[in-house]
Image (cartoon, rainbow, N blue to C red; front, side, top):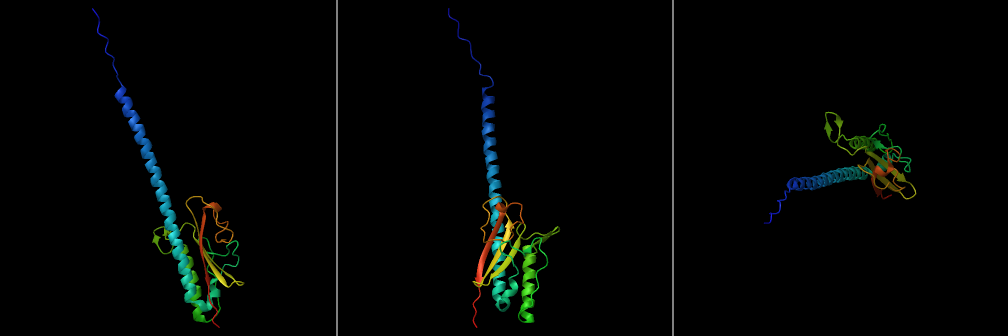
Length: 194
């Protein structure tokens, strides 16, 4: 008589399947967390760029509204190195006395307001001003040869990219890494109607 073959036991096989499933699930969740972090960083970068563009257009509007003393707004005398500037870590806004008292008083007030907006005064919390980009700085320079004003806003980005071009000196050397310095700028030319 033949003996029946012994029954093989597969003990623990279901447990291995469960562990493999958990590992795959954890890898997927880690990928999802990484995607969320990247998304939040991109959202913060986008928010900062939007704020910079708003402040840039604000200064252009202020210069256009007070064009009789537009020279008062060109306080950045070293555009290559972006000095002096307004915003984070800046000294007081420069004073100007061109044109009429009303015009230069308005220009001085505009520069002081823009400097405080760059420092985050648009939104405050218990700890202070928090409504601007990280390390926001603003520069306005004038090229007397071309008659063009260059308005720039610089800030510290969340991650490294490419350093801004040579013509964008606002905030140059004031951040930990030039590859994290972000700059938006616009040119403005005021017609001479005399």
